Image (cartoon, rainbow, N blue to C red; front, top):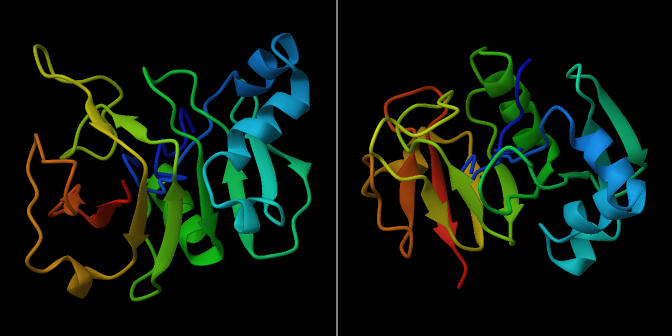
Length: 189
């Protein structure tokens, strides 16, 4: 596992989305404020009422997850991915977490289990069409999305929304269209 959803779990631009934590996040946190910094970053992804009760997780440089703080409301938050050029902490419900773990593991995500991810600090993604791209293609910019939520796990929800390599991120759009990881990105500002 080389990276976690920068949405995600994933921006994923999003989503998700995921959002996301990245290898080395725990080491960076130790240098810059430790677990308290991870918790602050992760909590910035969701509305305060959600973030207060969410579990906080982090990934170490070997790709192992650890629980920084236990939660009690069914949401899990991850801090900013230091490998991306912009802020991208994320917070997701259990269905979105299952979706993100499938994406990370290159497995087929659960079908027809709608999940919700918050990325209220925004997100940056290497590609709006390639779920595993770690850098934009030569000459292409990173896809930057302001504060948004992601809805994953429902193909029927995507009908009628635009997609493509350079989406208008000020309006709802589909990220990773045509893949099992396609999801709806919804800006909130």
